[in-house]
Amino acid sequence: MPRIDAKRLTDFTAALFEANDIPAPVARQVAQSLVLANLKGHDSHGVIRILEYVDWVKRGWVNPNGKLSILREQPCILVLDGDFGFGQVVARDAMNLGIPKARREGVCVLSLRRSGHLGRVGEFMEMAAEAGLVAFSFTNTHGAGVLVAPHGGFERRLSANPLGGGTPMPGHAPMVMDISTSTIAEGKIKVARSKGESLAPGLFVNGRGEPSTSPEEYYSQPPGALLPMGGHKGFALSLFCEVMAGALTGAGCSKPGVDRVGNGFMVFLLDPKAFSGSEFFDNELGHLAGWVKSSRTRPGVEGILLPGEPESQAHDKRLQSGIQIDQNTWDRIGAIAKRCQVPVPRSEEHTSELQSLAYLVCRL
Image 1 (spheres, rainbow, N blue to C red):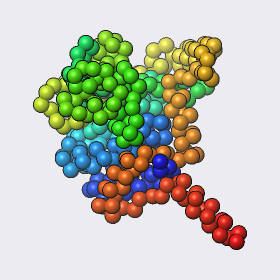
Image 2 (image 1 turned 90 degrees about the vertical axis):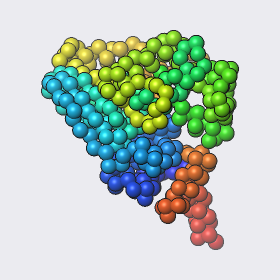
Image 3 (image 1 turned 180 degrees about the horizontal axis):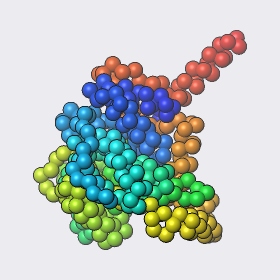
């Protein structure tokens, strides 16, 4: 599989977006967010999304010039419209409005409708945590993107509907949660399909309602469906994502007949100083982290990791070694680049081989 340096991959992705009529600042931000998702170990929300995003711009589903606007503002409330701009841009702009409001008022309830695909929601939770705030978010797909069966059913009725959370942690990197309310994000099925791999049992059913591990069966006709995580528990959480991110934001809930994929996004931003106080908050979370990590581990487990720590470890490793992309995905991205006459970066392995060959030639 090709392995690409993060900076080179970001520059390439930005150039590819610019060649598809996406303004340079937008192209750069989206590229940075996608590559950050790869660095954090979430390849399902990384550069594999280039394929969709270029298509969505052509379809008019994403407005590359979309701007965030304020529909209503109260001391602790922001109701925003994203104009179907790229989610990585309009949601970042939204957080940059909500964070200072929460620090000033103690709390901000941020409501965003008509956002393009947000990508990795954890990125926005990290923004809040790094600003010293606690964040909790609900996301839906604006009525489209229906992928998940209700508990007990096998026809698609809901989206993956992720929950996000972030908090500063004294003495640690921020604790960050970014989880779909389905057993798996659809992007992970796309990655497995692209690699020609099977998936673990129990994640989805085929179009006949039978358990399956084949990504091809998920995309066959009739289509398969993801299952809610934890059965009825994930199902309930998903429905409340529809309540919070769909009905309350004005984005709309999952329903038939909606094709344009977007995101509704509801975020609660809380300043610990306005509640228990910073000293108590920091002490309690410090003790909580130590208490949780002190547990004896099961065989084969090296240590307890808090939410966000696996991503931090993946980030450090991939920043040094480069980002691996499966050959099928890289070939499809390369085909888009060829049409746009954007040079495709060489794989790090290939570059290393050339450097080694050059060294040997010089020694002869």
